[in-house]
Image 1 (tube, each protein chain N blue to C red):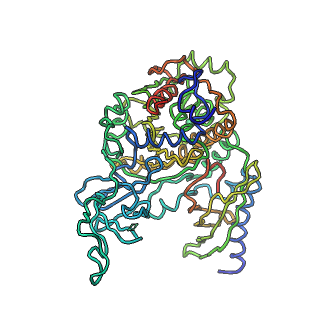
Image 2: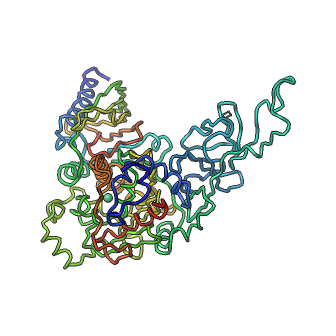
Image 3: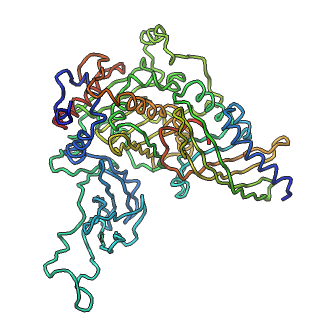
Length: 415
Length: 156
Ligand code: FES
Ligand SMILES: [Fe+2]
């Protein structure tokens, strides 16, 4: 099959059978940059808590495009493409920081911009001693940085390049925004960042974070110590096809389901085999009234917001070409956390992140898939757990959210 | 500080990395005092005072649990570490503890036979004498390589 054919979904494929080439095809990747990353989607770029001071900034990406998010002297949040309007140099060369006077100067020829991305100064504009200089009609207002439209929602900042992007709550959908507000219910305090670099296509991770099927089967630590099992009370909620919430309550076991798990003789079911030498790792606090101990919320394409026990984090998915992506974990607590709760969070961060006892394998599974499908591009996978629907379900034994991802993806990609 | 003590400290640093590189991880927690602090933390957090680490243990028991999980629960491809340590800077503290800073580089080799520079940083240690032997009361691996490839399962 030639790559141009790949711009149509094959006859035998639908959202239960996805052709493997979508993970490997360069034209597909380019189209994603166009239709998704420059298209009508909101992309997570920062937490407001990362930009507390006037003049503070953070460098990040929307797809392949480098962007900088700033807090202007007027206390508003702005974002712009980190590419000088003059000859294209990177303007901001730091990951984060504070610009005391609120300006950003390109080192190449020192064009200077403000936090909004507007051009403020150009060296030698009138020339030197009558020589050189810009034409009389050179208009600085026409040479600002490319702006990113931003919205701040419950302390999280999202950006979009498209005017067709709906407002953020409409984009999220009802359940997703409800759970978003549940976690982001009051001011948060950033506790740190870690970065994981994975040699696989970014969509494997998009699938992974919408997939409760794997959670108890791949992440053995999880299952063994009773943090999460597919037999637990929980739900899979799907909004607008590809935004999802998976939630579960630990300790609320459905006995019939548990019996079925025992019968399956899975390597994951090792009840009573292991006990923690230091149980303080899992001795958390119930901080939400609903008793829910696990929430994995995804906002396609770039955000996972999570609560696992007392850990709170956002994970930003940044594609780095078709074969790699970076996963940026930003850990947080609330500004009103007691010292005790803060220490619980710091300890429980052992569960998540690149070395997370219940999350590290997601890097591994992503690479396993990416490696194995290289030469089988036209074949498809099988996504049939719990049928072929893409509806919300009152349990976690389903791949409905993964199907939803592909349904929404196809629509947005016009495949 | 006597040369003898200096040698003893360097010996501890060397035995620690050999224990990990030789995959004798069950003995690894024994390098720490019962109540201890072990952290692997990105430099970008440490430098601005943000406390989140990728591995964090405040008891020998937690370190034992890491090893039990690594052996029995976590899923990852076969991999080996090779630590190179250098430039130890050893100072006696007034309370008898010894503070040490050294550099490290960890090469990781997987089944495909390629060795990559996996993690580079510095150790910042507080060493005490516990029943006659030197042990880590605190050990922080503060890493420059803030991009962790794939995952981290073996301690640094
Ligand atoms: S490229 Fe930025 S000032 Fe010339
Ligand atoms: Fe997972």
